[in-house]
Length: 522
Image (tube, rainbow, N blue to C red):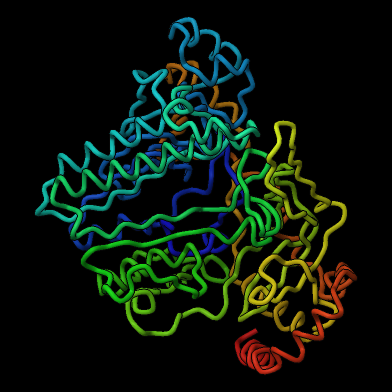
């Protein structure tokens, strides 16, 4: 969303944690830095999770005028204790009802730490205040203090409903229908999500009260599918967050504006392929009707030498609000040579996992085999993810137009389509650079205790950085296994009747898709 470029061209990596640092900041290329060219003030509220090992990595150094929120990826909603690695008794971490001094000593003495910040300073005065309320109130404050004559970009990233999911006890008395949900994880998830809905409603009311609503473009977008183990549901789609099936990749989104979206388009559904990297050019080139400044685009290039100043994203604005055709017929979902799934710890796999969609076809290479997780409706219902990714990779081809639930693997029936999509994945692989993921760094914890006052924050000077993880180079040099290795992992699980129906009913679309794939650079 922020960069408009794929992580593999920026030295991106699977994950980052409280003692891990994502890649060093690339040259200026975040959405608020583009918007500065148009006079926009930009503010971020909520989750950052794009690096914090030095001041240059913080939001206020990446184009935002202010920041209130969390630097890392997960935290306990009311105590603001970083949840990426902390394991302590639940009441201490979840509720925030204990005496602060006692809780502070207990939490920090066990290797845990807090994560709440105002601009570049820690924000220790909010212990016990639920995050969704904190972030809502800060966003409303920004709107109320804003000069309506000046343009504004507000990025509000709630940490709800990310694990560890919780909500105040009074939520259940406010909404009895939630109290009646019998499955405990589903109940917690529903309560936390209801409070996000309420916060968005409060935000919209404030926009109207401050005479900002009519000239506002409101975008609501999710970053990944749900984790069924934590109360979410992707049904009827297959899989989970962290994996390449539709349940982990296909998410809802909508745009709303009283003045910028024609009445004829209001309430309609957009069926074009849309990647999260498309938001930046859709906003800059579409809404602003301006050319993207090439000097602001990160210069990755096939060898990281700076010759490629092109965004990976595409503007969909004319297709969204007008009659233009959707700009995408192909979408790279991911290439990863480290295991970035939820099941393992980002070690070199010995092969690439990847996924690409072209026309109706979706090829998944070397992925674990996940199920279709039913939404539990009993008190003892359980969802447990299973991955055989490291020891038993699989390759799949789906027609996701006719089979969005990915129930029939047709890779064996369409070998030429598999070959052509493998060529496209290899093309994208050639533009990747070695990841810049940074491993665990004990200096981070030293800063927490010596100068951070129990809070995580920058632990290096501006010109310093943590040591680079050896996994990046080791994994990158392995390269992709050849096509014969990939094809040997194709399961024999396709439905003959479905395949025959595809061949008869989709012959024209199939030929066009294969021709387009063959005609592009490979």
